[in-house]
Length: 522
Image (cartoon, rainbow, N blue to C red; front, side, top):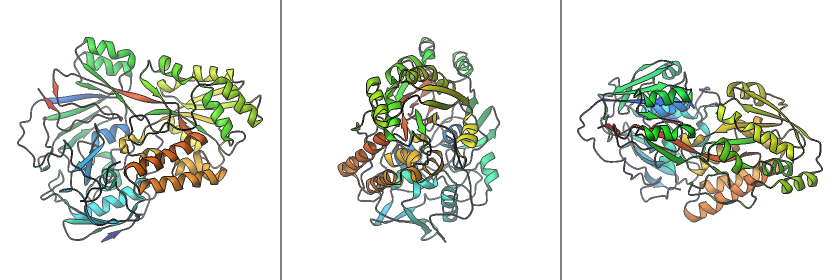
C-alpha cells in the first residue's frame, strides 16, 4: 500500500492556537530517554497534575495543549521527542531511520508492539496514521511537505521517500502518532487507543485518568499505578490544589505564586520558552500593508516594561522570531525594540498621521493585562486605539478567517513548540503557505514578492544542516523582522512547579503540557 502526501478527506480544521544527518540517516536519535529494552519496574503510587487548559479533542492530530500533553504518555509515533531537550528517540521504531539514499529511508517497527487493546501494530496502522496526519485540513500536514510518500516494504518495514534531502526526519515523524486504522475520528477524539506506556482509563471535562498499558514493550514502561490530570483553568484554583496537596505538579504557574510554592517546599522551574504574544496585521488594509508602519507600531511598544510589569520579569524581549534558546537563533539586522522617536520617524516616512487603530485581542488574562500599556504606548505615537477583547475561537472564526476581514491589528498568544523546536516548525507555523498567510494576514496576495522571498529562504534552509543551515535560517529571520507581518513582542518563560519531595525524575519543559514518562513516586 502506498500513501502519498495527502490522504483523502479532511480530518481537522486549522487550529485557532539542527539535527546533523548521521550516517544512519534522518538524524541520530541517541538520547538519555532511549535506554534500550524495558527494565522491570515496580509500580508505586499515583501522580496528580494540575493543568491549565481544557479540550474535547484527544485525537492523534489534536492541537489542544491539554491533549497534546497527556497524549505524550499514551500515544507513540515511530519516534518521540524528549520534550525537555527536544531530541528524538525511537518509540515504535526499533532504531534510527536507515538511509538507502539521501532521499529514501527505511524504518523498522519495534518487535511485538501492540496497542493497549492487545492488537498487534501493523504497517497498515502506520500508513493510515500518516494519512490522518497529512490529510487536507490537518494542522500537522505542513510539517510533512518534505515527504513524497510513505509505503510498506513488508510487514515490519516502512519506506519513506523524500522530495529533497531533509536532516530532521526522525524529529518530524515524532508528530505522527500511530493509532489503529479501525478507529474513527470521533472515537479518537473521545478516547484514543495507543501504544505508549499508559492508556486512558477515563476522560471527563474535569479530569483525565491513565493507567499502565499492560501490552507496552518499549524502553519506557509505566512507573506509577495512576496518572491524573485535574483540569483547573483558574490560576488560583490550580495554586490551591498544589498547596493543599491535591496535586503534585502545576503547569502555567503565575509569577506571583512562585514564592508561595517555594515556601511550601515545591520546586519551581523557569524554562525559556517559545510561547509569545504576537502582533498580526491585516495587509489588505492601508497603511498596514506598509512594512514601515508595522515596524513603527512595534518600535512604539516598550517591551521591557511589558515584561517587568505584565510578566513580572518572566519573559525575554524578542530580538528575532526565534527565541535566544534556539540553536538557529540570530539577532536580526532589523531590531524592533522600543524607540519612540524612531517609530515616529518611520510613520512620517510612510506619510501616516492621525491614524485610528482597531486592536482585537484574545481574552486570555495575561494578554488583556498587556493591553493598557500597549494602548498607552501607541497613543504616545499619535494613534487612537480602540480595543476589542474576545475568545480565541470567536476571534479566528469571526474576525480573521473570513473572506474580507476588517480588523487592523490582532494581539494573540501562540506556541507551536509542542510540535517540536526546529526552526522549520516555528517559522512556518505563522509564515508558511497556510491559513495564516492565505487568509489571516493575506501576506501572499498583499506582497507576493516578499512572501516568495521568505518561502525560498525557508525551503533552502530545510535542506541544509550545520553552519550552512544556521546562516540560511538567519536570513529568513532577518526577512521576518523586516516585514513584521506576524511578529512576537517577547518570548515567555515557562513556569512549572512540582513537589520534589514526592516525585523523582521530573523534568520541566519549555512547551505547554507536562511530561510524565519515567517519573516515579519516591
